Structures are given as structure tokens and as C-alpha cells.
Length: 133
Length: 500
Image (tube, rainbow over all chains, first blue to last red; front, side):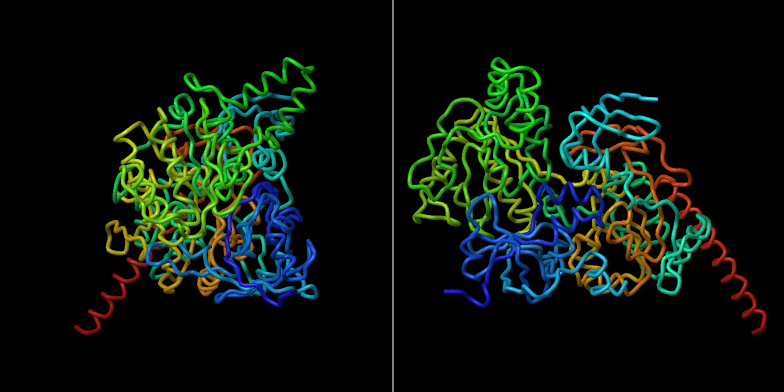
């Protein structure tokens, strides 16, 4: 059965594509392509009735962001959504540090829903939207 | 003119690979050997991209406009002296020489000083302060380790040559590598060109013989009993590193502490009453602990999966405690996978200068240390600071949105070589040389070994090093403070004269 929303655990981390693209430049197309995305388990993509590469909206108690959903290529991550480190992932992360300085970048529940009609904002658009500059 | 420069040090991640061979033509890097994909992206393409900042900018009427260096220095110094409690953040992609001047600037301003460590291995540093760390240099691990554990990290993505240079895929003096043997066999069968192409391919796609790769498989892991070097990966998700490991254990998110606890019990010959811990069958943990205890020299590397998960520094503390327990039975070391190439240097230099590695405050005139109070995200969260200087880092892309929103309420000065996210948000934006490409200096590898970075090309005209910029800002701050003091003294005298 196709579900409207999926509650999953957010995991953020490095990918080799993000690593290469950040060195090519944060404004590069490569950076956008490798960071403004999320990886879901094929079974979760199916649950949402999505196809590989369709936009999804990820919402947490701290914010919401639209990114492109892709199948996680290395194995099962059912119940999790993996986002490469970067501006798009940080839009839904919390600044709660548990009083030791480290913000909450992973391990909390977020909602993923299909958003085929909503655009993925570019770096400059996202900076403008979030910080007004 | 073409020049080939050997033994160049890569200024990207904490591995600080020092075997790069760089070809320079007309003051431009045109190709390189031995670098990983990330290194090549930076050293051959990224450093000279259109994203480069070539002159200082100041935001005027909402737009960044180019200005002279003198004007930018004066503006930055004015912002920092006008502010009551600025924050100086970053430092981890700068040479240690720059970090040293940074401490001086923080002391002069009486402000907060933090480095990127607070959002990567800050919890590891805190755990090390709590309990100590049995560790070794990467050279020791390369030559001696026969069991390698990567926990909550993916070196194949974040430290691409770590496995190849320091652990499972390198031939040590006392430990041989299965991967190297595979390459040797291949060499015997094919021509040189084919071999080179195959090596390139296999470094990405090398598949060890078929093995049970996940803890979900209902059979004990036979690969743990094999002789020679073994590599075990613990992670919440299968990664590229996990694909080439001898054994991969998929753990549930935020359950690392429990698993370490269970493993400590097993190392200390205690029984566990449950079937599974953190999603991993206890039978499997027993097999793994057996392999660890029977290793001659084991090494655990851990990443941000531990420091950023629930438990934070307690995860690291118990990992170190398990290593300590293992050392009662065999030789085991543990080491954090440090990210930016000189984040270890930032900790080392700050600690050598002030006594503390990060999360510093100089508002009382002497250094204070308190993670949770003087760490950048806590300061921003509470809105404590009223100006920020960011150097050689990009919190714009790596801090939570709300932290940067608070940062944007006050003036922001940035010193970065390129237009990264934080430079785009700056009010005073400085250009800087690429440390390790256009600027020589000292950096500390992830195992705290100091390595000298090389300068391989000249920087574009008019682009100074970040060390020079910080020194000039420091001098200007001193001048402005002296002027203010003189003005205050004169005003006080005038008031007193009027009273008389």
C-alpha cells in the first residue's frame, strides 16, 4: 500500500561524491547533484510510491527541505534516510548540543513525503531563503 | 616550463598523504599521481576554479563589493573591537602557524575561540581527557596491526586512502595485505597498462571472495577465523568500506554504547543474558571478541557516527574502556578518524598555547575551557556573541540552520580561499591562499604526527596567506584599542577638569 508519509531515522554523513564536489566548489553543479539528495531503502521508496530521482520533502521538528530521493546503493537501510553532509541536511538538523558543543546531526525521526512538484533549491536560493543573504 | 614535484603533502583530510607527485606547468598544477579522487578534485581543478576569491569584499547596501585590503582590514578590526564578545571560529584548514596567531588575537580581544573540532571529534577529545587513550601512530598500525576495526566511519568516502596507505590494503613490514597479493597475481597475468587500469578499477571495486557480509545471516562468520589481516566494519548502514571488509556488522542507530558495553562484558569473560544487543546477535559479538582477543595487534578507528549519535562522548569513553580491557589480553590501540587536515593541529596548538584544545574563552583575561558553554554552537544558540570571524572553515554548510541564523544577526568576517557557503554570507570577505598548495606550513596528521606542507605554486597576485591577514587584523585591533584608550583617558580628564 502506498503511504503518504514515512517516519524514518535521519542519518547524515560523508559520501565520496560529496567529498569530490565540495573541493570542486560549493557553487558547482557537482556539489548540488551530490548533496541536495537523500538516500532511501528501495522498499521505503516503494512504500511511498516513488521512482528513483523524484523529489521528496523531509520534515523534522527543526525545519523542512526538498531534495531528490535516490536508492541507497550499498545495502539495506530500511527505516532510515541518509543525507550527505551539507546545507540541505543542516536545514532539518537541530542545534541542541546536550551541553557538550556537538549539534544533533543524526539519529532522530523525520518525515519523508513525496514532493514531485516542489523544486529543490540551489545553494544561493537556500542561503537567501534561510539567511536572507 | 614543466616541473615535477615529489613528496607533496595532500592538504585535505587527516591522513595527510605525503607521497603525491604533482606536475606544475606555468605556475599551474596540470596533473598529479597517487592522489585520491578528492585530492585530485582540489589540487588539479578546485583550487583554480571560478569559485576563487581574488580580492577582499565588504557588504554595502546588501551587496558584496570589492574593496582594498587596507579598507577590509580596518573594517574587520573595527567590527571586532566594537563587539563586546566576538567568536573566532574555524582554523582547521589553516597551518599551525596561523592558528598560533589566532590564539594571540583571541587573547587581545578577550573573546571566544573555537575550532571545527567542536562539531567533529570534540566529544572524542573530551573522552580522552576523561579516560586517556591507548593509541599508536599510523606507521605502527600499518606495519603491525593484524585486526582492523572501523566503527561508525566510512574511510572509503571521507579518508579515501586510509585503508590503502595505513591499514588493510597495504603491505606492512610484519603484516601482509590480501589486496596487494591480488594485485601482484594480476601483474603476473597481464601487461603493465592493463594492470594499471585494473588497479584503478579495483581500488574502487575490489570485491573480496564471497563471504557473509551482514550480522543478519544465520551463520557464524568464518572469515574471522582466517589467518592474516582482517578488517571488521561496524556501521548503521552498509558503506563502500563495509563492502571490502572481511566482516560487516550492521548496528541499530544510537545503540553503539550498548554494544560496546556488551563487548566489554565478553572481553572480561562475563555472560550476557540477552540474545541481541543493538540489533546484533550476541553469538556474533562473541565471535568478534574472540577474534579481537586472539589478534596480535588490533586497531580500532572510529568516526563521527559515534561522536554525533546519542551518548556523544560517552560512546568514545566506553570504546576506549573496551580497548583498555583488550590490552589486558593482547595489544590494542584506538584512534579517531580526524577530518580536516589540520584539526589535530588546531587542538595541539590551542592546547600548547592555552592548556585547552577547543571551546575557549578569554573574557576574564585568561583562558577558560568549557565545552557546552564556549563551543561555537552553544554560543550561537544562546546568542552570546555579537560578531563572528570564520577562518578556513565552512560552518555555512556544516552548522545547523538555526545556529547560522543567529550568526547572521551580527557582523560576520570570513577568511577563506573560495566562495563557500559562509563566504557568500560574509559582511567582510577576505581572500586567502590555499594552505598546502600556495602556502607552506605545518599540519598535524590524525595521529598527531607533525608534517610540513609544501608550496607548489605561487598564489594569484594580491592574495595573501591567512596568517598574514590575521596578523594585520591583530595589529590594527591593537592600534584601534590604543586609540580608544587614549580617547577614554582624555574624556575622563575633561570630565574631572569640569567638576573641579
